[in-house]
Image (cartoon, rainbow, N blue to C red; front, side, top):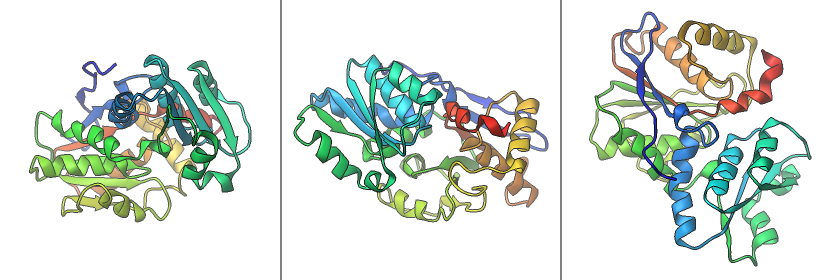
Length: 289
């Protein structure tokens, strides 16, 4: 299950950049995609060590995390259950979850806010049940994400990553600190008012001068987009051949280009963008294209 992964670093031909590279975590697995694979790796090992047989997690109706957890469980001979935020619906993502054997419990938004209570109510007496927070947020997840830095063969002046919960960002920052790198870590929160990401990162690793948050590239907030961003995706993918999504990675690449236009990063500096995968989430916005 944890064999050597395929996540190459590829140079992106995109003017005016001369040293723009992409870490292709989106190629790790089609269903356990990108940072989801890294987040779940050590969580699953912990569950197996504790002899748990059912993974219990949480997410929205178009959650990449749910698909990844369902696939991970299926391949590992485990059962899985997800509390899905909102009313009962059918879509492509939940279809995949069901095909991987995941039980879906649709939950009203107020009840969903207290995930620990939901877990205790439904699985408190089940000694085989293992709690996984939304998005896989945990210390184990940060350890998995920190391994991205271990895999880099050269030094980069700037490393860019998008953030939802801040778990991947915390892992990257920890990796940079552990390796005593001088790289600047640029984090692009996808939620409006994303300054809280800094607090989330600090739960797992000390903040440092390496970290810089850019709060103006959320395009309205989580799972929000604009015609400008959709047009950017179409042009970017046509020109580079690299598929990006409107929820996460498009916002990151838009920020890189915009920051260069403002001369806040140099076109000739070595820049690495972490492609965190999650492309299946585009199904939730297919009407925008």
